[in-house]
Length: 475
Image 1 (cartoon, rainbow, N blue to C red):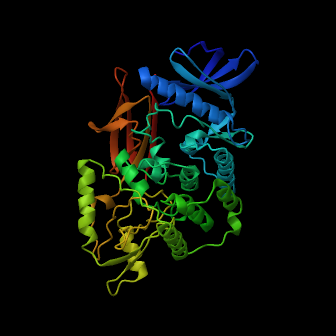
Image 2: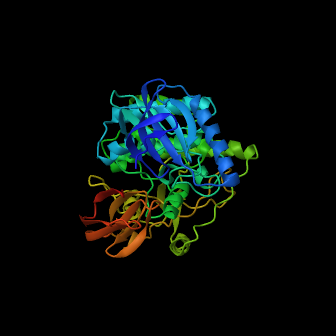
Image 3: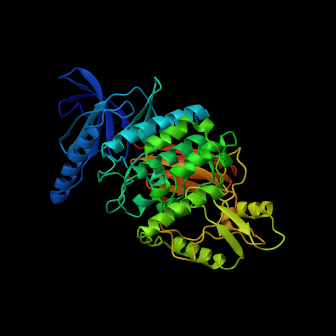
């Protein structure tokens, strides 16, 4: 039920609900103005609650110092009846998440403008020592008048979201930087990586990383570079490939030095000159050599996901890695992977064709097959400060169909507050954290169950290129 009042604020209506809490349109009787009131559920006791309260007010104060045209203004912070809340300016518009879910396609100039405005807001926040840590489409508001506003500064570190991991790692998996996942300290370049992921989705309509479980998503973020945006959408200027690649480089030092530099490239993308992948890799190696001379120490690799499927996949990749004569150039500095086969008689076109057979079989309807090259650890000393990498198996000289190459359709699921997902009677997991299903083409019965509520059932007929979305809220 919608409360009549929270603190001194009169609740007018509910305007949004998520895993962390609810957003209401409210009225401040003292100033007689409308505002948005975001509540954060607190289910903690004792020292945990005190720690939460200190962090909550500290983060809210930090966010409250940010006065910028592209950052939502925070007016007040407090708690009432076990609910912490933040009062902020009321915005007329739609979230970028909503617009992408509706299938809205932005022209390149508008994509560049939206991303540049986000970068402007981030640059201002970083200048004031504030890192957002949870940049994603749901936290970007596109106002009816055109400007962009970044929301939820100060909430990314609160320990209550469904996307929150153990320890001090917080964020939304598909947009988190590699250093967030492995639990390293973060700075503004973590936000730049997340903005690169948002830019990728605006350009292509697909998130750069996806999977049926968190382990798969995390593995991809740490180890794999997504296909270049222009391979998914041929109408995208090549300059965006370079911008995305640099923003989403695995190591923070290989990304843009700051968000302001990224904003500049976005606004001038038509004037950017294409840079070859080899040139990008050369620059990356030069930067790493400098860090090596300074004595930087590479971070420890995280443990492989402790799942039966993850272990089997790792073993399969290790076995295949040594079974094929391949020389690989890994463009880990934000460039795309290029592979050169050593076997005689194989030219670049043949190599690309064979690599495509191992690419994820989930392109959008108008996309060609995507080539993904293998990544292999360096045999010399590992790159200094390089993030952990795991080998990806190369294509064999005589590729055979594999389970990964079978046609699959994608079904995105978004359930609030949560639900158990069943496909054709078999349980697939719980959403959240499950956000996407990969199903064989054909007819499927998808059922979502939540405690004593009536299950939500939807029957879908999918082809191999389908990207279907299911959104449901149990009320």
